[in-house]
Length: 591
Image 1 (cartoon, rainbow, N blue to C red):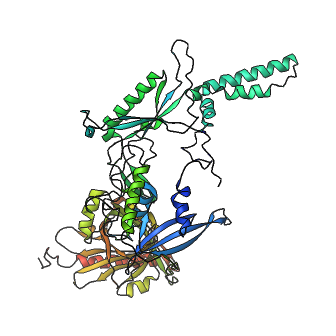
Image 2 (tube, helix red, strand yellow; image 1 turned 45 degrees about the vertical axis):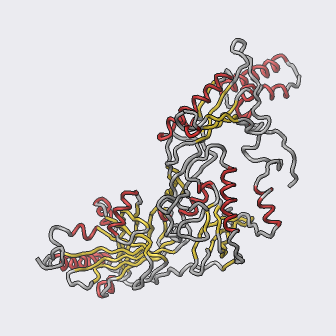
Image 3 (tube, rainbow, N blue to C red; image 1 turned 120 degrees about the vertical axis):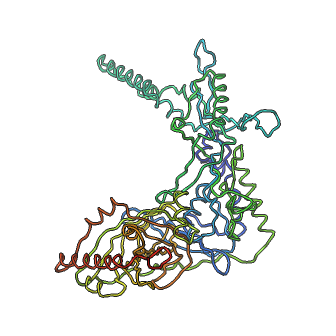
């Protein structure tokens, strides 16, 4: 595009339409393209998979310019293989991408999503400044003229050695686009109604007097207003060192930031005091951003989420921005900041990125990225249903922790971290007679799993269910579950679960039949096969959910009542067989 000099229109904060700002497309990206870089636009990265031979397979979606019959953009999936991968999607974009790929990248530190902050950003307003308080003449500030920020006031930090306690900050005047003047003017409901009433009165008088004068331009100008409030108002921007104790998480597949102004109360109070003094000096009315009263702030400088640290226990990346446990995977944006940087962080982030890239250039490689074919999904058809079938819906809830292999340990850890896991399944017995006669008593499972660690609600692509399966111990039976899933990054996952039915000392029939120990495996693992463990936990049926489950039984085919009766009789017979045996002690010896 043609680049023009600054038009002083105040649009810097919403995007320069004149090409006057040296944005990435005018510096780094254009230079990279000149030197042979392949720039792919309208693409969204969805998956990052480490390869055994080294490097990463990066899956992405390309949004085509065409739309389908329903008006949605046509999408095509692609994959590229690279030796080194640099993530620079911003603090929220990079963190979100890594959170969505926790299954593909199971060694990611638990520091992922931590140390988030807004770089101390605070937005307030000095409205209706006056040249003096006696005449109430407006002070012309004209915030819509010129660059957005031209001046900064720096309040020193305790580390500056000035003797001042507390956290330092900056206060900057902020401009706004020209059109915002009229938005401010028309937003004054009382004044707008008064101007509209005056115009209506004048038009009525013209009609009654029979005047045929054309005053439309004056009336339009009068309706819009004089723009005095916008011309005499000034947004105030603050930034500095707030407390980086926020967390970025996935909530039902969407990114969510958990952060509060509470731990930074003193910092914000001092900054607001300085802003109020500036407003008073201008003889203006001081106004907080409306979100301030909901314990929220507006930030344009999100930082953290993939913080830098000295080890995987302290951060997600090292001093060079390389992810612990994944050589060649780098975070080179504000996500790697372990805390606020104070002033506008753009140059700091650029310097950290430049340093990381220079470090990798000092270790050159001739390896270049190559495109790969996108794999197809597995066939999930489980075959037709024959004979008299029985189905019921089951819901179980609990906790699961990634990185754990023992279900009980995973459950305890996940409870502390509030990492919830649940499923709702429709269990179907395709043929009751075959089900009863078969040794493994097989059924199918359909439904969904909900786990924020994996991206929210995930449909079950294929599911197996086995009831009262014999084990190596004569006094023990198991109820088994196996579900095939895909997370938001389309990584294949298998959930394997079992309930242990055994007559231990005490009344344990409810605990046994309502407790499911689950393990997550990498990949889609068939029954009888094993896979690498991603996580573990435990689920339970709540009494209320069990009561609902009883009402969901239904049957298809001829003799529906008989089919349900056969299933119930088999279930009861199996329980009697298990809990009618002599109970065993905790060590497995007869009591």
